[in-house]
Image (cartoon, rainbow, N blue to C red):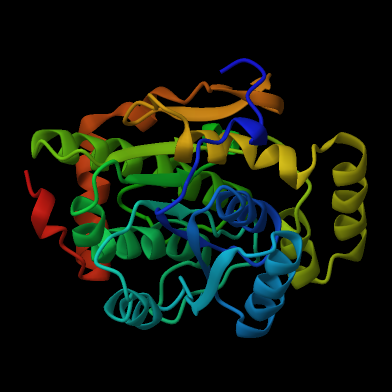
Length: 308
């Protein structure tokens, strides 16, 4: 894994990949590099205008790329169901659950879930479950869910998943990222119990320069906070290209283990992909089972093929 970079991505010819939040940042880089290696990539984006621009940019940077846009709003379960119901392929080699929001002012999704939990976890839980038949029918398929080292700030509160008792934006973000890891843990466990070959893994970018950091302050009208985040990105963050490498590694490298967590090698902050530390509570079977059950109840997505 030492020194692994984009040149090490294996040939992806004939593979079909879905990348959520692919119009910018880590998602765009991930989609572009998969397309560069020959994959047919579906950019799943909430904004049609930004998605169209991203596809045009990708095709200009990778002539001959097989890339297409499909609209997906993870904050609207109706949109998630429509995306899955109209997905045109019987096979799906790779699902990258990348899209997310961070430290937003309190708000709710279309379905009434706290926004960070609803978008970062529940939307991807529903999407993965609805696309699972295509994944199970594809040899060597993978699901890669993007978490964050900030998951270590907080475990989930199974009795208050939607932060109805008290909302603290950074704690809510951390809990949603813990939920990403618990989801990966429980999905990997269920797949193994069924003897399925699909690999469920997680990754994180460390501190990467994307628009994720500035969205919260901008929505809150905190201009000083937005400027501070921009300065931090310029001074301390690695590029989106570097931040996407752990995701690309988890998605394509040979021998990636189920329930592994890949991040940057230097203090989980920057550098080439390496195994990443994770909080013990993200490996708790009982917590994973409880979160899974609540997620299925809230979304109505039951994962019939991997019941245990």
